[in-house]
Image 1: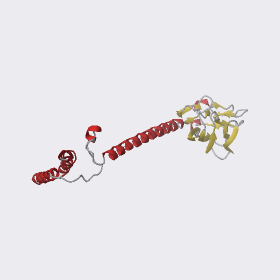
Image 2: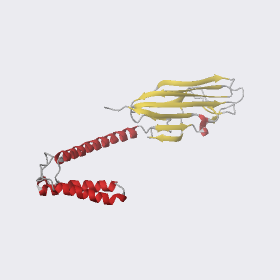
Image 3: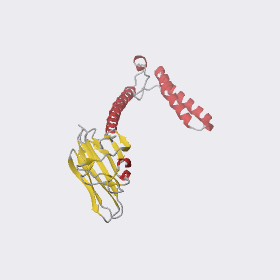
Image 4: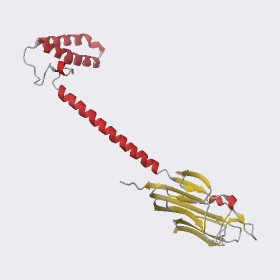
Length: 255
């Protein structure tokens, strides 16, 4: 029994006292020493049964974890906590992979403008214009300032959806003519050959005009969107003000 008390004192009471002593101010060393001595003597003189029913000093030799009333329960809590942390870490890692995959899949955006150098002089006029043509013509927005994901083809002026999702497209049509000349253009957004939206102008009162449209479209992988100038119409001067942009709003995720 004396051995049990001594082990209890050395493994439980003394560490506790040392911890308490570290938390106290340094000016109370004498008081702490006397308290320690009192507790030590009281522990050595104990002759009754130990108050903890689960106490078992044999655990020192069989499990090598020390004697503690709640040793088994404490180690079980420790093991359970570790396993929960491990499962939580696995879940976080899996979620991070999904977020990374989702983020990578929505990096599709572009912005392109027309090159003023493609304008030609209209016979019998000083105007330099793109058009008119005898058929609808896709507008070649060849100057690229953004093309994340490389979905936009500047040679054709066509955006091809790299993956299914909801996309946002916008375009601005601008034209300027000489005094008393006719503003005459119609620019339209087309998806897979189907007209979606358009802007137009036909008057002799304004010397210049611009208009913009924004559309939100569901796109499947491989769907194409482009802007075209209708036959018989023209865009003149400052063609760099004609802009075509688009980006993915969110992808369609297969569950």
